[in-house]
Image (tube, rainbow, N blue to C red; front, side):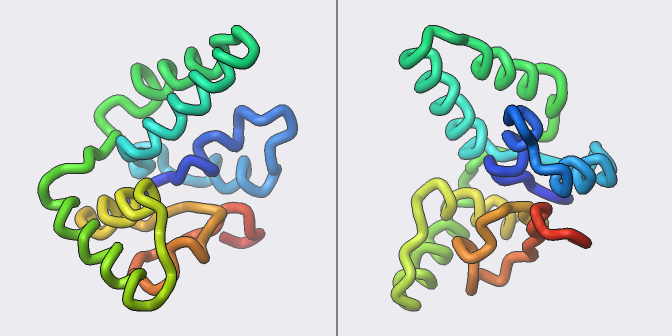
Length: 141
């Protein structure tokens, strides 16, 4: 199971997406790719921000496509088990003197609970958490 961070799921929709990321996504077995509720929250925030700024609902429609078609049954919640892992993640990072954002902490916790690999560009944001990480922006990932 590979959980896609926001910067990975949103890359194909950019005007000039990174070819390395697109190739990595194309090599993956789709049923093993998952999203998390915190990632969906970030995507909808971006969609609403764009709508308020420009009146374009394009990105909100894309989020709907992700939810209703592409990732049906493959969106993991931030549930009760995740809350314990979240507390541990935040405490470990605080002890190390490296804060982690609430959203990243939730995503990390969900990955830990499910034993999943996190695909993200921001691997340093998740250092020291015993997470399996992959950076699709790097050739050979």
